[in-house]
Length: 203
Image 1: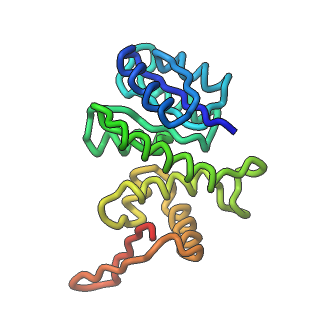
Image 2: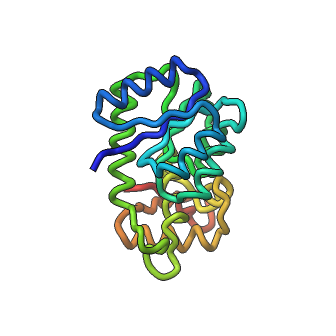
């Protein structure tokens, strides 16, 4: 089956370049010039992955990401931006984005990111149920995993809870599940006194 990439960027030249990069990898391409148009196309064509610009008229990338997630919880969304600030990345991850590509775009890096995100989406897709198992929602699980994969150092439950945000008890339950699945490692940090602080990272 063919793979369809939805490219949403208000710059026609960038859209053309991205289209050529994707077609060189034998992917089908659909293009939109605004966030609102991108959301409408997304609902119609159900693409396998979205390349979404941050700064656009008529819905920026953040609003568009939130709208796309109302339609589909699992399709990878790669944000295209010149902004390297961590707080921007955290805001997009909270909204449902899965990855970032910094402009100016380099073809090998973008193709690699797309392939990785498509592979992850294929491995985690479950069309029949939003639950991995009883009490464990796939969307919540992916949000926590996406947060951890973008951190340079292990995160505590409080840090994860503040970033997403998800209730402390919920984060603890999902991390316990991921630990039992062998996907998360617990790292205990000992202070001068009291109980150790546990932090978590993906294996």
